[in-house]
Length: 419
Ligand code: EPZ
Image (cartoon, rainbow, N blue to C red; front, side, top):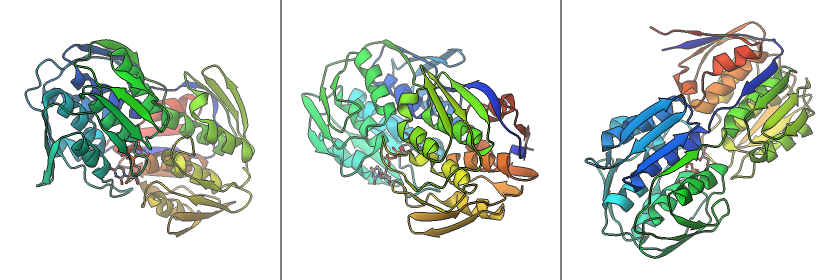
């Protein structure tokens, strides 16, 4: 397994491009299952989760062709095996995104239950309940969701809670259902709106994507389309925190400042200088930052996927801050590793109290999940001495060559090839 070696206390400066959003690419790639015609998806980030998704789609019977970096052609002409097997799903929960489209296109699907992961139980009960309401007959047994349906029918459904992939699964299923579907309490993340943009280009009739209420008029078939994935707001936020931590001066290109409103506000409140231009964000870091309390929440609130990164920043603040994680029940795994570096963090239920002015020292660390791993890289950038981070395949799931981008900004970071 590859490891990272990071040498801390280097001020970052320069400019880097932001890649396509992993969490927009995954549903958009799965949307190919809704038509037998060709889809062309651009700006797809070459990360592990994308490779896993393409492998899964090929297993199902999709022709996949990667024409250049970030450009993928997909054609789901013959779907021999409408199934997502355990050995693929266990490495990536988002495989559940094939459930809705397979059911809508072929009338059957067999998808392994994603199972929990380090950040929480990650149930898919909303997905299953809503598809049952659309007429699907769904059994959950032996670790698999087995679904059958003649043509799905439009339904009015209220999500019990905001679910990003739940909204995306039902949105895709509704495009081919008979009649009208109205979904309430939908997730409003930019990635949902991006998927809807692709589906409309394929001929779907969708209103309201990006708001909490989405209307879909089912059609008989969808057709080919070309689509460009939006920039990755979580990658961008991760690099903004890296610049803040090192008092750097960094410009992010090819990004979407409009997707980072709450994050930019919080960074300004803790003293960082932020300049927004069309498709660019410049951050002039200020060390030490001021302490700022924060709570994660559904978009447009602070994204849970940036909570761990923000916690590292608050270990350097001029006072104490409280971070509240409202989305996942177990998303403070990174706190223990940060404590090993010298951070002073106390946990109580969904709250983490972070004392500032912690001098972090380099240590040997273990990555546990995608965003916690990114947080350990950030901690290494600000720590005294050398930090070794093991199991960086977690980082590779969601970041495109993170070490190259950080090195371009002056970071002293190298990948040690694993045995
Ligand atoms: C998406 O996960 C993202 N993944 C996650 O990013 C992100 O953290 C999360 O949304 C934020 O809400 C992708 O888009 C591929 P949810 P998702 O359904 O859809 C509960 C990353 O690092 N819930 O929005 O799986 C659930 O337990 C990943 O890129 C149910 O109870 O998350 C959680 O508490 C991590 N029943 C809350 O809702 C359901 O059927 C939000 O989950 C579905 C969800």
